[in-house]
Amino acid sequence: MADTVLVTGGAGFIGSHVADELLTRGLSVVVLDDLSGGFRENVPDGAECVEGSIVNTQLIQELFTTHNFTYVYHLAAYAAEGLSHFIKKFNYENNLIGSINLINASVNYGVKCLVFTSSIAVYGQNQLPMTEDMVPVPEDSYGIAKLAVEQDLQASHEMFGLDYVVFRPHNVYGERQNIGDRYRNVVGIFMNQLMQGQPMTIFGDGQQSRAFSYIQDVAPIIAGSPFNARALNQVFNVGAETPHTVNELADIVAKAMECEKKISYLDARNEVLHAFSSHNKLHDVFGDSPKVTLDDGVHRMAAWAKKVGAKRGKAFDGVEILKNMPKSWREALSESSR
Image 1 (tube, rainbow, N blue to C red):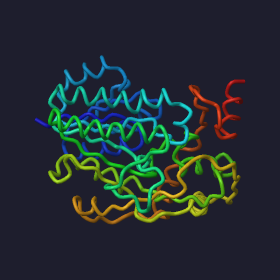
Image 2 (image 1 turned 45 degrees about the vertical axis):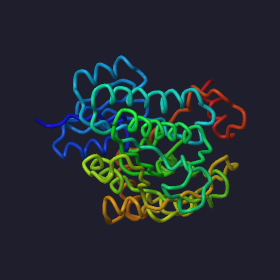
Image 3 (image 1 turned 90 degrees about the vertical axis):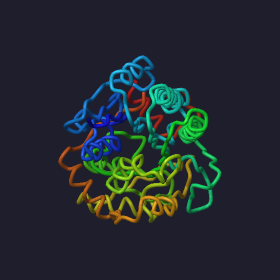
Image 4 (image 1 turned 90 degrees about the horizontal axis):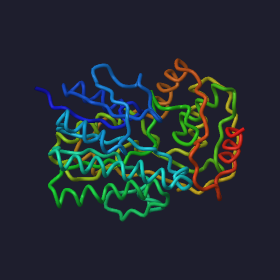
């Protein structure tokens, strides 16, 4: 009988691709997703989909009792670093407390391994490239929450013997991304703006750089990690090797979408200017694998985006702090309240 695994956030972007990989391994997959940022059609055929939230402790208890999960893949999160400054309570409830609910259940029900997607946001403004042995100094509430979960997993392993694997992905893009989300995933934001005849909006001068990572370079590694003994109870950076500026990304996206490049530069926001990481540890444990170039990956995503069409995003309706919020976000809030 196949082992049963739980994938939280499995109707979302990375989660649905991880669920795909797990099904190909012959595992029985249960997806838990509140559909706040994901879509039911993303859930692969063959997986059971349960609509609900990781903050619902009663639901978590029922799922673990019913399915006796062998492995848990925790990808559910509201992953908007910049916005997290202004939604602290929401951020910590969903990204920290919800994660603790899963850790508690995993300990109590004897889960073999919990795989957690953290974020490069835990590093903050560190020397480059970012390596796993650095002391994290996150600069936003999202990164703080992710780091707290990492630390609790380590403590839970030492106290209760719960094995874990932590991944710190960065700037992942590709098919099934929620291109209607105006606060995160710049590749999707650019594509959505172009399909609506709008200029691509860039905070600051566009010289900030990231290593944009194609989904198929990330999801298979996450899915296979608990079956690699050398990966257990370790933290790994995962993603692309080469950083590109946001201006360079805008050029590539416009060409892939076959649109004229129009850019609207906005006031700079409070963010890490340059972020890319070393993957030497990942390569040592998982081996080297071919990487999809940014140009190729963006063209693949563009072909998908043209098929699904533009999505109308909406302003986040639970903002808790307005002070120092970027002007464009404040204006969007005002428009949505009319």
